[in-house]
Length: 492
Image 1 (tube, one colour):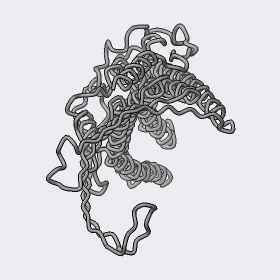
Image 2 (cartoon, rainbow, N blue to C red):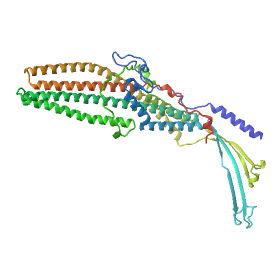
Image 3 (spheres, rainbow, N blue to C red):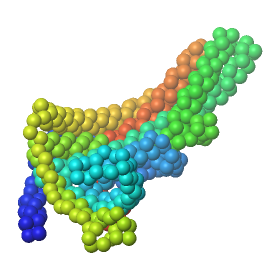
């Protein structure tokens, strides 16, 4: 008994000694090139993006109740988001599986048997069968406890990888939400742009119809020629055709929105509404903020942590493993005596294992893990570069579209003056009706271009919000860990 206690104390001491030993590289976030500022003139200034973007419901900055309702529906019913949420639950469960390995495994396998041995059974020396069959019973109530000591941190690295993977999946869910919400907002504002174009064409058709009536009246009076009537009819019908074609584009956008909000396209409809909103003021912040405000960057960073832990796991394969075990219980041929002291059985021990020759497998595993880490670093840096490019494109786009809108408004004003002059000169008999038709066509083209620019500004502002991370902050991932709780530990 003393010898057994000494062995137990020695094993416990060795376990405690090696428990704090974790092989493999300590994780550090890889560096990435970060510009000092965005390449954009005033009025863009560097400040925190959170100044104007609320966390989560960033679309509310556009102050459109219809858009707010659609975004709420998409968060609740979008199937892509449900898939991402299910993957998050899988990642959490996977992390919980690895966390559970910190605790001993306790098992039992009760056994009861009654058997008859043949009188002609094979015999051993000293135990002849004598042609007499034997009927006997056997009962057993065993218990077994085993625990693999984490000598060199293989388990800790595995848990570290599972926790980082859980956090990466959470960041992927946030990125999916951001993508779906941004796509919905972009489609919505494009739909409103098309509504504005259709309304403009409808008003133009009404104006041209009145103009055609006037030309017909003048033609009947011998003042206007048949050519004037034909020219006005051509422009009127061309404008109607444009309106008809835009209805198809509108329906396609409406169907795309229906899919995003999780509704069947045939049953989904949005009432027409002209575009009357202007993009809100959105501050791009400083480029270094982007590393903490983009969920795709956070996901790539967490994938680096996973790959780093995998290197530690591969490194731990070079070292021995130690498993402590204890077996005990009761065995008896008579169930009435099963729980007697004399029926007690037990055993304690330890099992050490070390791979001596693996044919280069462990080295290959290390090479594989290190190459995976290098790939994750490159992926992280590429994600950062893409993020900077997206923000810069959106900022530049907003600057260009602001200037284009001012210039286009001047063009619309000039086109209206041109039409007024052409109509006045035609009425005075100074020009042909072709000048009026040309002025009408020119005004319509410029007003259409203005509607497109206004729609593009709103869509670009949505892309800017998306590229800034939608008000999200990577600090929320730090608290996202699976921690062992008593109810989980004792659960079957």
